[in-house]
Amino acid sequence: MTQTTLDACRALISADSTLSLSDRRAIMEAVRQAGKPPPVAPPPPRIISRAETAQLLNRSSRAVDYLASQGHLKKVRMPGRQRCCGFRLADIENLINATAQ
Image (tube, rainbow, N blue to C red; front, side, top):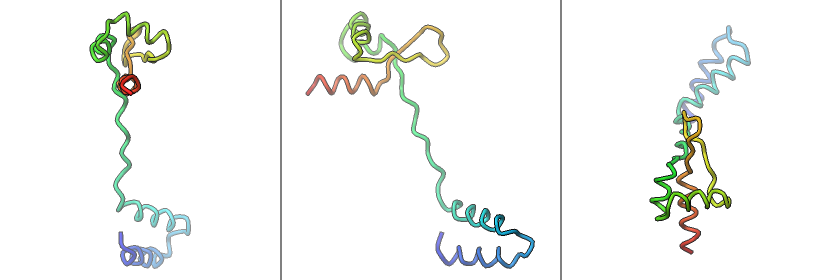
């Protein structure tokens, strides 16, 4: 929002004698925020299954379990599941990049 628009809003709000000082500040803050886009939340991390992890790493499922037990991969519970767990795709990509270097 341009400064001219903000000055015009400020003049209109100050002309209203029924508003308190805190109300005027709240209205002006809302006017300032109206021109800005709402903040965008980052997407949730993608969780993939043990079989998909094994396929990405070109290893067996037992090798994936071994990597998890050694601490190279961290198990994450699958959403809405009791015992099923998976792995974060970002962690797998980091592991692949670390072994490539």
